[in-house]
Length: 447
Image (cartoon, rainbow, N blue to C red; front, side):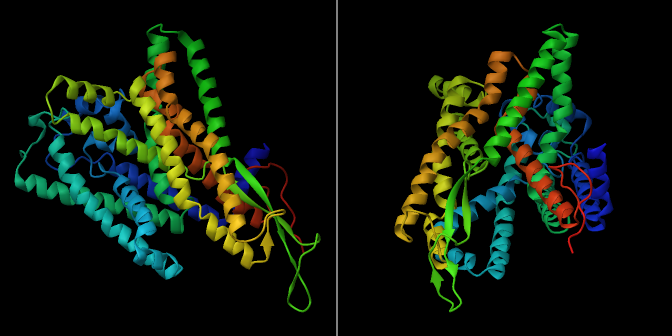
């Protein structure tokens, strides 16, 4: 009943209610577009092609991030991933390109220019990926009869324009959700696409276990318990922080600073996994390369490499995948956690870490702490990333359902859910209601 009261409180706040309704409407439009097939392709003949990706594999992984749009050859077949790729490239370029570094320091105006550069780069990536996707449809199993108008130049030009427009429209939906809705729009679009595959994947697992007498309901129960435990571990990974105590000097009446024990004491929260899911995305992109390069050769060695790196549940694939995740976690943490800037800001604000001199020694201390907590964080992240392989090999779980046992899919769902709940929670607390994290009676306004 208390939880129901909390939901009622959410609905009472007009601004929050409007934001939630807008977000749901935008998501409905996105899911509708994922079912609209490209003009010139027979939707009925795509059924067998779409079923090919429900069994897992690299194709199933790509299809999961687009919510089935990839296999449906829909107007949103490329999904929001080109925008994600462009954002990663721009973020990495900010380290080496002075112009982008200058924009980063200009505040809101600089951020707008960086966003505009990201949008143009997204269009460029789409113009490369769209023709590649269309040309690869026959190789991925789409029969020639499915192309009603044939694979003519007209078909390619019109389809490329539609695919690019679909990605731009999806990008616009994500930005509108961020500005006018609730949560991070781009992340929510990805999460909804992933969740859209969950009921079908679980239904296939249920049929395999119960209808085909492959373990029965007891195995379904065991799988759900293990899944719940992995979700809890993922939440711990996302939320875990190392608190570095900080002492702030007390400002005196003359305007100076007086360092004493009565100054304000706060903390610097250093996240155990400061890089989020980015190391998995980087590593996943690299893992596509060996298979693609090996496919260019017909030698036995090349075919063996292609087979090894095409099996996302295989031993060698996951071993290399885990090592790359650990490496990229250190790399991405190093470029996204500016310990030198943190130390300078702390010094300018009159703060210091007890027992550590302000300035370079503080930066070295923060860097050492980040290195220490990044190791267990990266190993933990790698284990969650390869958990689907354990689910398939040890428990015999269907590959489509196993993708929800870890990897980018689970971490994105957990991260987006926590971020959205925190935003809703802030609205409730600002209106003197109990938040989602705590149930109870309405808080009374403080005079």
